[in-house]
Image (tube, rainbow, N blue to C red; front, side, top):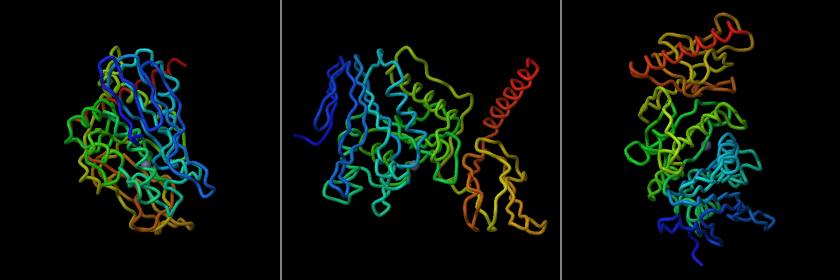
Amino acid sequence: MSDEGSTDDDGDGGAFTYNGGRVDPGESANIRYGISETYLGDPIRIPVTIVNGEYSGPTVFLSAAAHGDELNGIEVVREVAHDWDHSDLHGTLVCLPVMNVPGFLAQERYLPIYDRDLNRSFPGREGSTSARRMAHRIFTNFIEPCDIGIDFHTSTRGRTNMLHVRANMDDPTVARIANAFSSNVIIAGEGPSGTLRREATGAGVPTVTIEMGEAHRFQRELIDRALTGVASVLAEFGCHPDSAVHWPGWRTVIDDDDEKTWIRADAGGIVDMKHGRGELVREGDTICSITNPFKEEEDIVDVEAPFTGLVVGVLENPVVYPGNPLCHLVGLSSDTLTALRREYRAAQEERSQSQLRE
Ligand SMILES: [Zn+2]
């Protein structure tokens, strides 16, 4: 038997097959698929839900928790798989809510086996390291048979970021997914080697990464926005033909080269952060102050914004050594700034009107 999944494309919706099973059009299946074994010799199995629509259309994977402590995406994938009405689905959804099961059980980012990073191990290889073997089983069975994919992440523990898409905007289909996801911010770039999105895209399955919030949390507002993004991508690719693509109101695409806009601490100490993720700061504004337990005036170091921009990522754990990142500040074009200010004003008016009503 082949170790590889596939989708027949015979017009009226084909069966989804993987090593050991098939899911026919109009059916869904919850699978526990073995990708490795523990020290006790027990199987390590990842949960997979395949929803094969009655009608033909693209095969889309939604994956989360390649980093075991990044939980927001798990809820996004779970809700799409189990709470949505798929009676009108054109195509197939391959839902992988928890890829890094050992990391998830330990609530750690990496595989707790020599701290390997599953999201640097794709596409994986049979006969290689434990991480690459796991990556290989996931990749060949559930990623390669797909047409497009969305992989969900959060910021690393101790930091948070606003919801944004990371995408290789030079690939037209990747750009189409990224634009359809309807986030305000897209960070362009192909991503590090071994990441699911880069390797899947390289293997002909255009894929984006969604970054949203913090590790170890369910953040309802971000989960809801990501669900809107998934619905919008499914509309764009004809999976739900009666649904519309969502426009986020304003959008900025940032080059990966601008990553150096992570502002780093020049002093060690305790951080008093003045701005949260998604906030606009003006050039010269104090982003945060770094102090120490004595909090004497001469010990306080103010960190100023070097330019007007958007706080995309920010420190949550308020302690730093010199050189640690404080916030990811991103410059905006004047058009984006205007649209953003308009949105802020509208939100403010809505708030003051609802206060009047009370
Ligand atoms: Zn991650």
